Amino acid sequence: MTIEVGAARVLVPTGIRRGDVIDVRALVEQPMATGLFRDARGNPIPAYFINDVSVTYGDREVAHFVWSSGISRDPFVEFSLRADREAALKFVWKDNKGGVFQQSVDIKFIT
Amino acid sequence: MSGFSRRWFLHASGLAFLALGVRRLAALGAPRPRDDVPWKVQQVLKQLFGDRPVQDGHVQLDVPTVAADGRVVPVMIESDLPMAAERYVKAVHLLVDNNPDIHLAEFRLTPQIGQAFVSTRIKMRMTSPIRAIVETSDGALWGAAADVRVTVNGCG
Image (cartoon, rainbow over all chains, first blue to last red; front, side, top):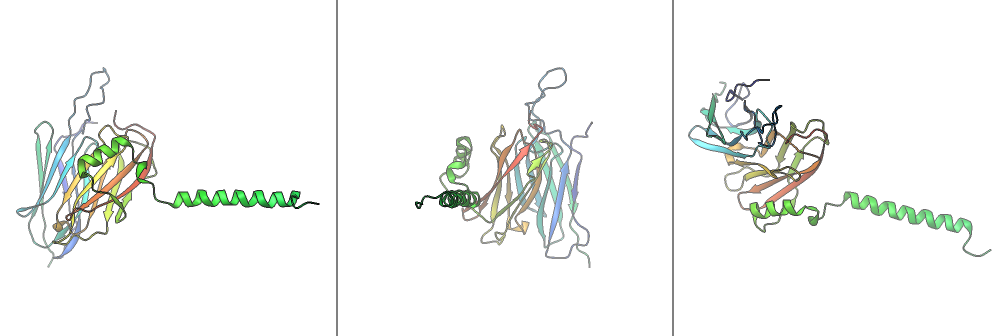
């Protein structure tokens, strides 16, 4: 299985009303290598994982996650958010090798 | 015939057995004692929270009882504590006793989150207790623990 490192998806429900507490789901493709495994030839696979996630809603950071390599490959996270304004919800994932991946989605209310 | 008849003995032994059974049941229902936490986990807790005690309650930890694949174990943590501006859940910590890295993740939240709920998928090396500890903005700690049996090592 090959993965496209950094490909990310952020999912919010459709039909949000002002003040709703919504479910936000986010996934980024990343191997989350612990550094403890070896490949088929016996060479150790170096640690390579997302260790820092920042979630910004509009101009404010609303959540910040600090992860170890114990999170599964293609790290997925789901949490709640009180949608009280129309703004962008932006995710920034950072890995232990300095890689930065981002994805954002616009929170819009139905009229 | 004396008082120590065969019938008396049967009654007495039956009662004794019953009493033992009741004690067993009571022990099952009782919360785990604090010293049940392994030393290595206590060290991590001390590093994270100092000497603040972790109380049981207010945290719901949803994990499978048996995880067929230790590489992907779904974990859901929920708390009924309020997410109001004056008092909210500041952080959700996830610890796995028998993993190489015990403090697996920390989720820092703000009142904007609306409800203290986090769900993710984790790796587990072997059968182990999972602990979810919720930290409120005023410094209180609430926790829940659950055992997960793992059949395939997910950590290498």
